[in-house]
Length: 320
Ligand code: ADP
Image 1 (spheres, helix red, strand yellow):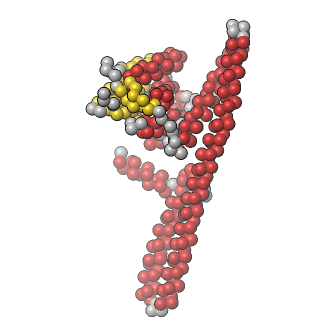
Image 2 (cartoon, rainbow, N blue to C red):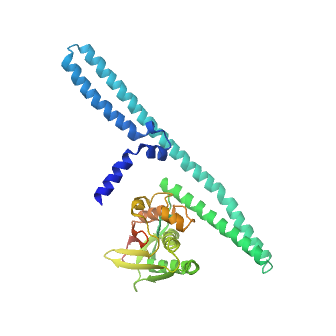
Image 3 (cartoon, rainbow, N blue to C red):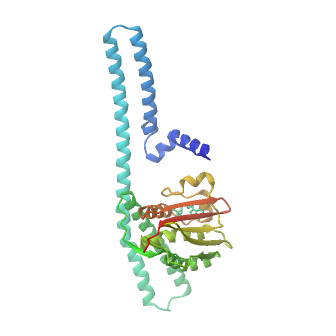
């Protein structure tokens, strides 16, 4: 396991083409490539200076060769700083672009939703089956867009370290029960059983109610979405020492072992999940993990492809 992780780390570190694609720069501008060149130049410089000092007595030759090495190292160092600067600027511009585009999209989407409500209230019962179907599809698509825009804005807030939380002491069992009730229609529509086991006593946690709803919504909707018809999703909640731990278990498609290390990365979707559900952005788990970590908690998972997944999170319990 450790050997596999180390091998993957080394392969990723030296996969310059992948790094260049990820950073949006050319291969020779990637920091790893420049560091390799710098290491090589240092080795050649050490050998060169050793050779020159052994073979030439003239201090002039020594000074010129050392100056040349310093100039080369200075030039490479300058390239490294410029490429890091370029990546940082590009990243900042990307974040600003997402933020502006999402804010601009919010208003027209809200308008569409409002117009749909108006349409439905103006013609109560007067719409034909076909019209209702079409309006239902428009409403569904605009809700999806609204969710995507909301997720993008949350990602920007997380990346800028300004995801606001309004924490209050709440019973996690009650929040889990509420989330289960909200997901019951989706589970029924997907032909998936949905069950939960909560302890009798309350598990008080300090959390932002809306954001906790986002976490539970993500874990439950994923479990249902990535479980085939006839499957089962179970939610267990237990208190251990000073922690409350929630497990969302499904017997769905699971996550392939070689993709598990990427699951919490922004926009990542595993290959098998894309086949089982085309609907997804790869942002939910990234947001959920950040919300939990900002609340003093943790999120992790265990999964086997074609067997199922267990997503766990834990939070500190508030003692009265
Ligand atoms: P998405 O919108 O794609 O569901 P998430 O961030 O919620 O985005 O999840 C990221 C990816 O993690 C998913 O696309 C899927 O590949 C994988 N995943 C998450 N939950 C499950 C699960 N319960 N079973 C199988 N794969 C999952």
